Amino acid sequence: SLPEISVVILGAITSLTDEFKAFSTQVGGAFEHINDNFHGLDSRMPRMEENIAFLMFQFLPHHPPPLPPSPQGD
Image (cartoon, rainbow, N blue to C red; front, side):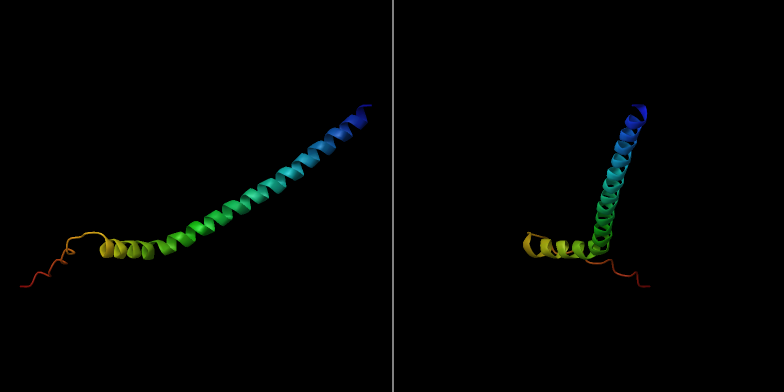
């Protein structure tokens, strides 16, 4: 009968809605985790760049580093 069908349909919709809520919470959590990792990376980036420059200087054939411009003395 019609009421039984509507109860079944409503049950299915409710179940799907709950599943979707759980899924979107999970996705939200994953994105938050990725975001936190990016912020962590951002704060470490300058240090990483220093390390990379240092390693390149140590191991790659290189020219002497350019001298800093001398202050213009009167």
